[in-house]
Amino acid sequence: MRRPDRQALTIIDWEMAVVGDPLYDLVRHMHLTPTKPEIRDRMFNRWALRLAPEYTEGWRRDWGVYRWIEIVRSAYIDLDRLVTGASLDAPNVRRALDSYSMTLTAATASLGMPLRRMHNPYLARTLVKRGPRTLTP
Image (cartoon, rainbow, N blue to C red):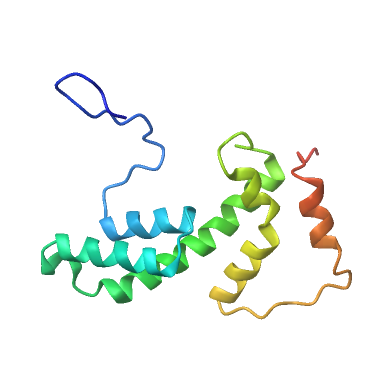
């Protein structure tokens, strides 16, 4: 958030703050905000050109690994949200939950797991359409 005083910028959300590879931040941003391939390529190229070569060595290999991590992470987080109903008021969470079957399919494929045929192919769609439920003992 930009401020009018001398400090200029203020961080207002530390929830996902980590110290690590800035490439991961870029990949995560693109995962959460899908972009067209040409825009994604432009962002990666600008990122690589602005950092010293020792910080970008191997980035083309690494971004695929980070993307894979984000695909699987999304499946776990969205499953938790479906079950608990947590964070439903957060931006884009409802959209993510509405497309959970696609998220799960992508995560399963990225893990190299075969898709299992369900006896009732409508079960997954019904669970997603009904929305999150709180489990009670």
